Length: 534
Image 1: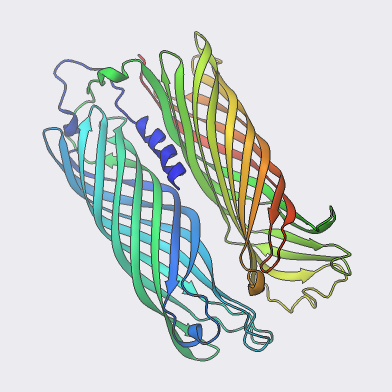
Image 2 (image 1 turned 90 degrees about the vertical axis):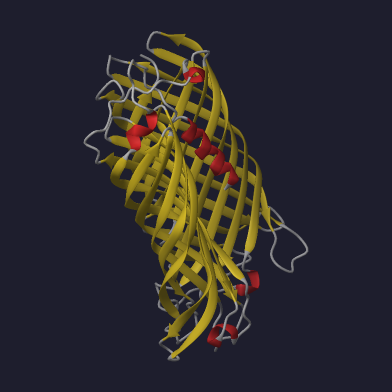
């Protein structure tokens, strides 16, 4: 996540003050005086740690401590009050958001046919909030702030156990938990009453004991859970200050030659992920294909241009996947006869970040083109539920042997890439702007984790791919509603692959060759704020 934080810092830096100076201007802090309220949204990532099990959770070959990562979206609102002393701003803020962060951890081993094939510790963060003190320093239109306070979360936990003919074993429970939060960000005044902000928050809940009730055995088992969450947040606030001063804060001298844009995008993406496993000879053994990976997506973006032609740009975003499907194929002679099973993809997510540094070598009135070098990170978490055989193999047959709600397989993919590309934009009219970029990925590395939840003898398996490459294309069309605010549409295409890769089964002395590929298509609506210039 350190790489993602660097991208967030680039985006936040663009929120520095652009407004022109004027005589008799108000102190910058006066913009922030009084009550305010607004909305927030963004992407979240977290980790759940399980330890100290009791009852049925400790009875059969437990694998604790256990941990799982989480990714997802959140959205909510905030209210607060600020007081000002000179350039300093202090206040109290309450915020809350609904979320959909899911995670799965390995917490049990092979138990035998009568006691289950595996245990999976599931966590779901459904909502969180905080009451925090804020302190900041006003510079021009910008307020740079930090926060700290008390936090609350509503979470659900479960440990489903697959036992043939006894599929009701599912110790589960929900809990409201308390913790703490720290954070920092930049808020930027667009107009006297309206402002936008970019913020990073870290929440910590636990450790704490939770009780999980099992309806099959009719008892409660306890386990200790600790949960941490990081939020990458965008927000929009309205200040209820009837005496709000007109914005006339001066620009910092160092920013006199800087222009730029920041904003948010909302849309949908669709994509795929496929991996092939080969035998020791170049014989295809198995193929897993995740298709139609559609998601609702949200992201924040920023670009800063210096008059010299140097620019930095980037974005940070993610999405929650809708339902789709996964196909698992196993081939002769290793698997006889040929097997093809179908599973439903649920509770998946993706996360992406890009940061670029470039130079616009060609520039004219209303247009520019430049090259850039940058970094791209893409992560996707996929979960397959149920298993139905559609060929003649006995695997997952009959079709009702494994219920549709049983988690059987997860895949977490990480792609790290170097970007080399060209980016340009042109004003088609005085209010319509076209922007496009193309990036070649000469170096792409893949890291994956495969969880076969009903095969604890091989769970987890790590996967590595290298000598990869890829292509990333993007274009947007924007309309300037005002001189500062634009709305528009954005389209994106990504293709990533690593033809050389491997994995190693537990207790195997040799590695097996693999290859990996992933693709993404996206369509967004966007709103941007443009700063600097006349």
